[in-house]
Image 1: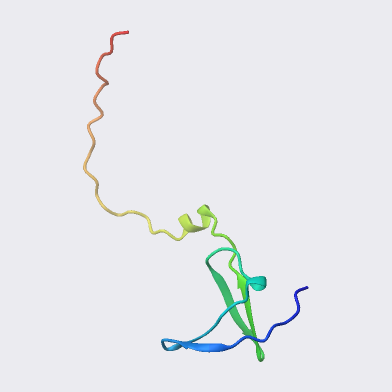
Image 2 (image 1 turned 90 degrees about the vertical axis):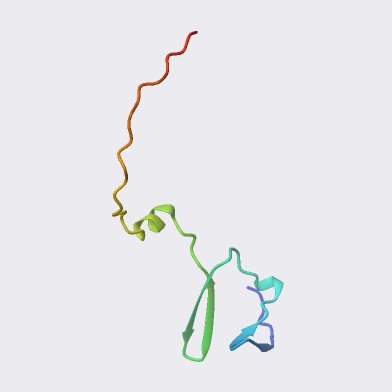
Length: 77
């Protein structure tokens, strides 16, 4: 287990931010943050599975024009 480190917080626009030291670097680009009592917990977000992303999409309701299914052009071999 990596020992605790003292870090400084700072203002980032209207937000409060903290630099994460390299030994605590999170993999991936997203993280989940929650507060437990006085503790702030930051964990890497689980990867998004394609099926989970597809399940969030709304079905298409647009009327698409019919497509003429023409036979392929003859090819001489």
